[in-house]
Image (tube, rainbow, N blue to C red; front, top):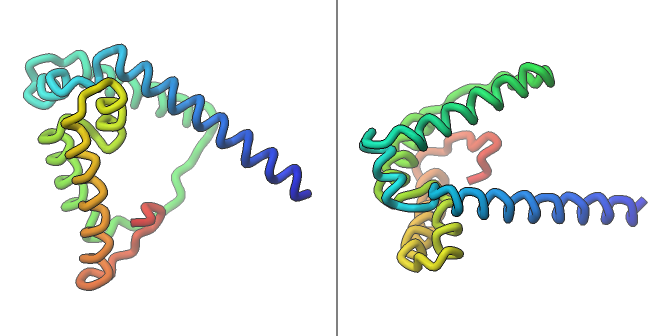
Length: 143
C-alpha cells in the first residue's frame, strides 16, 4: 500500500515538474514572460496576449463542459474583490503573475527577483493581516 502511494506521489511530482517546465519553456519562447509584452497587453496597445488568454479560457470552458466538471458552490467573502484588484495591480506593475517572474529569472532577467521577494512578502503580510484583523475564510487559497 505504502509503495503504491509513493509511486503515485512520485508520478504526480514528475508529471507536475514536466508540465511546469514545458509551460515555462513555452511561455518564455512565445514572449509572454517579457515585461514589454505584458505592458502592451495591459495598455491595450497589442491584443495578441489578451486574445491568447481569452482563447485559453474558451478552451478550458469547453473542456470542462465536455468533462462535465462542475464548480462546487461556495461563497465570495469580502477579501475577494480587494484581493483581485491588488493581484491585478501587482501583475501590471511587475510584469507578471506570480509564475512569470520565475520564468523571467530563468531567462536571465534578474530584476524579476524583486518581484519574487514582493510576492513572498505580500503573502506573509496578507496572512498576518488576515489573522490579526480580518479573519476571512481562506477557502481553498490556503493563504
